[in-house]
Amino acid sequence: MKLDLKSLSPQHQADIARVAKRSANHQRPRQVKVECVAGGVEYDSGMEARYATYIETLARTGGRLEGQWLVDWDYHPLRFSLAPGLTYTPDFGVIVDDGEGTRHYRLLEVKGSWKAKNARESRVRLVVAAHRFPFFEWRAVTEDRDGWQYEDIGK
Image 1: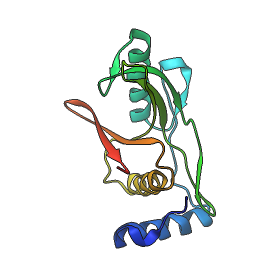
Image 2: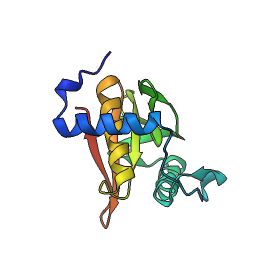
Image 3: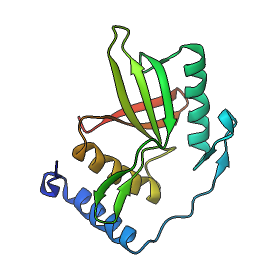
Image 4: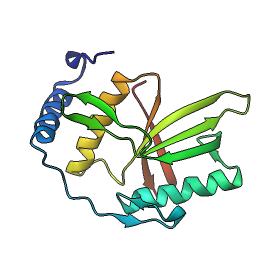
């Protein structure tokens, strides 16, 4: 399935062009690695490490994620090619069960805020991936004082 860029807002079109140009020039924002307690895996941010700890706890205790049973999860589960020289790797993949035997595979992008420049680039890639690969369930995840918040992307 090919994404029709004209179906996106002018702002998203400009963002995609800028991100693609940046990717072609191999300019990447510096990422700080943070060691997470859950499994000793290195994550790209403290926020991702906290979220991994959260979903690992749910998985071990038979907890629910967005009202559905969490079956399994993985970090950086897939890599999507969005355009020549432009890829996207979601932070997490989770398998949830609705309790009636139907399982869903969700891809999650975790950010503390969507206001930072690198977060905006991640959001552009997330939106493009959700449009190009609509057979996955896509979520943007942020944390506030009430806990983890989920936003459907691509629906």
